[in-house]
Length: 92
Image (cartoon, rainbow, N blue to C red; front, side, top):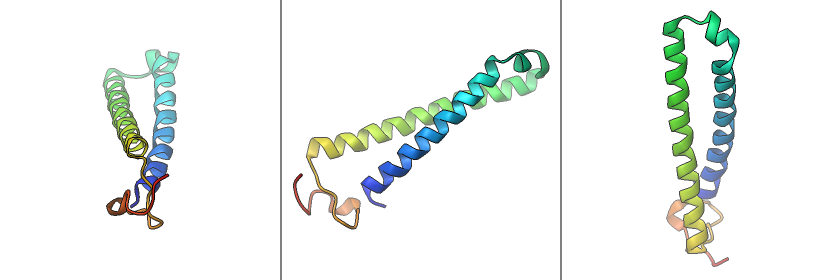
C-alpha cells in the first residue's frame, strides 16, 4: 500500500477511534457508569479507555511520522503509490 493511501486510511481510522474514545469517556463520566455499573465492568471499561488512548496516540505518531517524511524529503509518490518508489518519480 502506498504511503499516501496508508495516510488516508490511518487518518480515517484515527478520526473514528477518537470518536469512540470520546463516547467511552462520556460514558465513564456519566451517572450511569458511577451508579449502575459494577466494579468489574468499571475496571474493564476503564482499561479499555486506556488501551484505546494508547492506540490513538500510536496512530497519531505514525501519521505525523509519515507526513514528516513526505514534507522533509519533499518527495513525490509514484502513481502506483508504492513505498519503494518514494522520491523516484519527481520533485514537488
